Length: 385
Image (cartoon, rainbow, N blue to C red; front, side, top):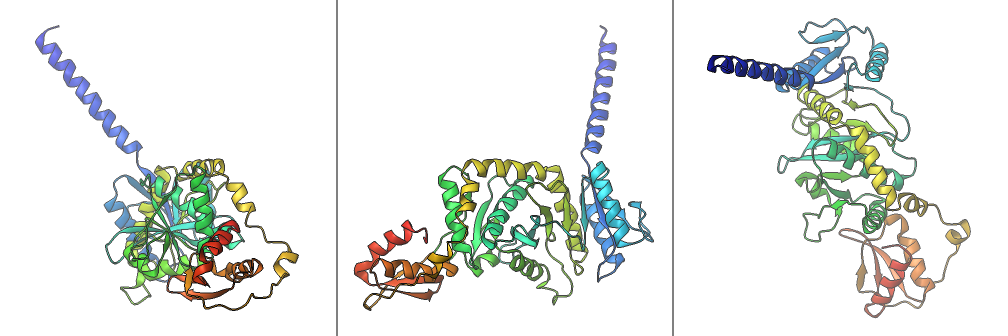
């Protein structure tokens, strides 16, 4: 081969490689839909958010679902919110879009949204699990599912080992206990440690502001409030200016990637939600959810949920007289508030005088110094701590 021919051949190879790379880049774009109806801020604000997302994210292709807008973005005509949702669902089912952002969407029972906020103290992203929808009709099971949903979402968005904290709300101690049991049996959960001096996986309000964990587990109603506060605290409340929206609807068998924004979400949040939707889809959040549930089932998920079934009525109604009163100076924390009186009764039944109380970190059982070791043994045996 002559030197000239070799140079020509190399040039063709380089040209073909460049074409291939260019083609590959275009193929990697994630098509994300957005319905434009329902905002309290108007269609113009929604379109501003869509354009902002497109300008900032060349790996995303925004598809507008609605009508009557002037834009260079692709538009699929829909004349109402109902029609837009019907088209959105069809486009998701056909693969014409991989994810979508919308308002006023009703998820089935068992599906709830994992939100993402920017925490004020350190400007850190934090997932809120969850923010809309209902994971389960039982509060504790719902929060346990919220945990798995959020871990899967974080992994889909690139965080392979997210830290998990449980907000100090009703049910937190039961959720902590079961998650720790699952970890002991092999589920690889990474617990965060509170930034307060008393530490622990149960988070204080301060940890919300600091963004201590990557994932903050709570109930959906509380999570919804936190989303609104984090998104709109700098604007007076009527305009959500910060964060990524209320997140994708996640469920064990749910196959769509639909992210929620609110009527008050402004352009920056809408742009963030579109980015969040694209990350969830490109990271294959649906598969991540299945992987997490496969892993947690191996650690005894079904048995853990069964343990939450209500005690028989005869056991619940059984009351025990208090032993002779003592001066109680020792505190035993870490007991769920919904179980605090049952915990006291279990100690009375074992001839240990105890009182319930409220410490700075939550409910406590108070006992005499000489009874503390035995009380701890009983409470652990009964799964109160």
